[in-house]
Length: 412
Image 1: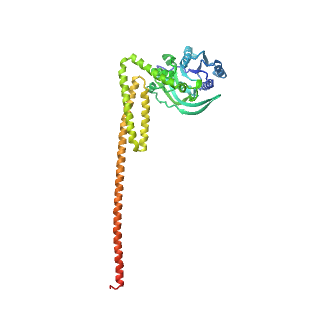
Image 2: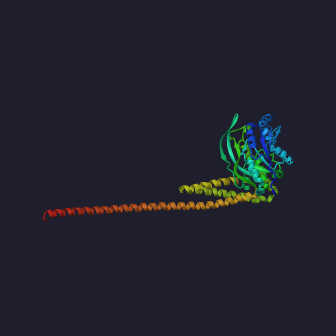
Image 3: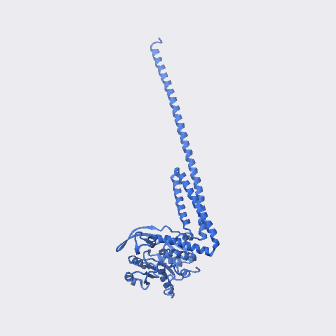
């Protein structure tokens, strides 16, 4: 990453198969970019050729030569479809057509009009030449399909956004979709094509290979729209939503393959990896036990303390998930171990806080009991004194009456 590229031309790769209702939206998304120096490669991966051509036809004049449509006679899979476009983009090396960046714009997603302007500007900046790629915020758009239209249901922020992308987190799970990710073409030439042996999670594999070359910059703006259709089936379903079991299976198989590669390259790494994993597991169990104890002690705690406990529990759950899905990289395991140790220290401090709070509440209850007892004794004493005074006043009244009578009787 010695110097930024001179130009700003972008190869946009769109993979599609019998989703022409969505493809039209993707074409409009690319055509609507304020940065106009791009070339779109649409790969029809075994879908209806006539339907794709009919969808593209109304836009050909607007593309003005910036469109290439590739038809695969049979479906080769998403990653192989991407590779056909990448191979063609890299083959066009003359000045007028050479691309400096690559981005995958799937047929069901969309961009903000300034996505290419902001991402290309970021990577062309001298101060950002160290970055291999750049990532923007994403908005999740939930929608429902009807026979002739798409109905938007709601929008949500993408939960995995990180102002500074953490490689340890990227090792544990795929943090983003291709729609938000612009890569330098020089990096693509270095790492090669997508792994077409993977039926799913090929994007995650490619993201990790990009990260192996250099850091990934971030733009804290929601410039990419990741569309989700949880209820859709068939060709219109999302690959993640419609194939959860396949994703879960290949998530494990992929991490197993990476672990085997690490152990084959360095057999002695097995000992430290196993030790760290055991320590992480023991710490996780210890913290879960402490959380159970805190939950029991917090029954009499203040609402503010309960809120803090809930936040800590949520953080522990997230950390446990990260540990469970951790990759084989030693650096990632080391960072997770440090995070576990820091969380354990916070738990110890919180246990002490809850215990002090419980002791204080016990002392308060005892003080209230003593106060009530003293108040009762005081009331009893006052009643006794009142009885005595009333008796004395009664006697004084009788004497006064007798004196008056004595005077009236003349002393007789």
